[in-house]
Image (cartoon, rainbow, N blue to C red; front, side, top):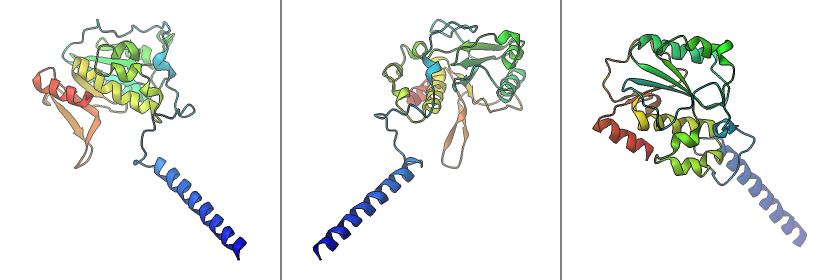
Length: 229
């Protein structure tokens, strides 16, 4: 009887362990998954372009750059060198609908030879479109998010590209004010009639972050500071 009891107990341990592993795997693939910053997810997303200090064809956006109050920001954070046709269409739509606004495209990856063709060369023909290279260390310097960037938090997350995009969109509005648009957002008409501070509604309970506007007045600064915190 003794060996049978031991075997049964061993089987119970094995089954319990397998159940625990299965439950853990399921949780890690849901919205309830924690950000395990103490782990290194080296093989999931490559965000190395954010830290490349190479020279390229685009001017680097630095702390000395001044933005007009009517500014629109697009961020390309996926480390591909340029924009695809759909993204370029979003930028062009914003530029055409807002001829008196400055439309800024901030690209995290180094860009070489874009003048010879492609989507970026087409966008250069619009006088109100500005193409920038963004180096995240310099962009975050002197802001409340400096320590987060310098400590490498974006390298210790499972969703490196998405989190970089989240950080940079709020950082741009914190630094300059204006309008942020996702690169898959195509505006059909000018946004001028809207109030100075607004965001799109994602659902009855949630506010979207794919298109939003923070002004430079007291209200806009208060919202910008809250989102950064």
